[in-house]
Length: 282
Image (cartoon, rainbow, N blue to C red; front, side):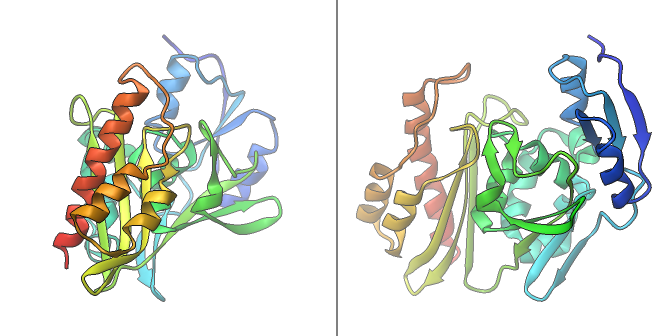
């Protein structure tokens, strides 16, 4: 299929992009286009205007400063995948990047595009949530920073306003006590996950604290398993892991890939795998 007719504008600055988005009520931002172009071609999306932000300078790049890792919205997946800064200071992203689609997709897809599209089965939104990261945006009233816990609102819905442009994400930089884990189950490598889990924690002697478990593929947004997080805090052993699996507070829907019961079972299996990853870093 071919997309419905639309107007096209190429922004040269973030402020120009914000202004262009205000010209039509159903305008869309075009970055890497790896999700948007597919929805256009299937006519699942029919915006009147596409605002291309690829010509905007200063919205890409990866930097470590003041205990944070900042990644520009136009940074391609492949850049993050190969980044020494990401590998050292954002290891959860480094673990997740090879699972995103296929090399051709990672060559064009952008970090900001993945977060803004907010597919509930995608890896990066869950990683951002697991790390307690922030989303930086620019809109008609200026710049604002949104916590990941407040950003994902529903199926493909976020806290972005109609004229907001996502400009960067910020993550707490990992230190010697940071522990991260990642696992997903797919039918084939590169497919969207049937169930996936991104996790972060802080080492606390022989145990863990500040545990954050973000599941994807189990709801309309990435979902934190808060009961399991609380249960895992402390010295980790088989009994505590069993209790955390039993405490999983997930309510996944049936979908074309698996029943709700299957997803819940797989979520428990992934939790066991990821907890082992966390503890092996001790």
